[in-house]
Image (cartoon, rainbow, N blue to C red):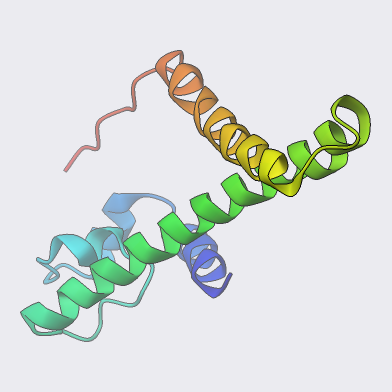
Length: 122
């Protein structure tokens, strides 16, 4: 949650990547140009990697949380209530796994219909 708020605040302060580069012209690290954390501190190579790892972990945690929520809603609020009323827990666990895959499947189809991103001018 805090990373999301910091990222949104950085979009308000630096709406374009060129604005960020004007504010921090000596920033050469790739992670410093995409990270919502302030690039004022020049970390050593290991800490830059842990910063990138933290961003990847936060992103995958968010995605996995939404997959689990979606599967839980599908199985407990819809499938268990209206489709298969009296089944074993083993059956509902299998239904949850299928629902997780079903929640994971649509985004690639939706993303393939989107327009390609615009390139950033340097």
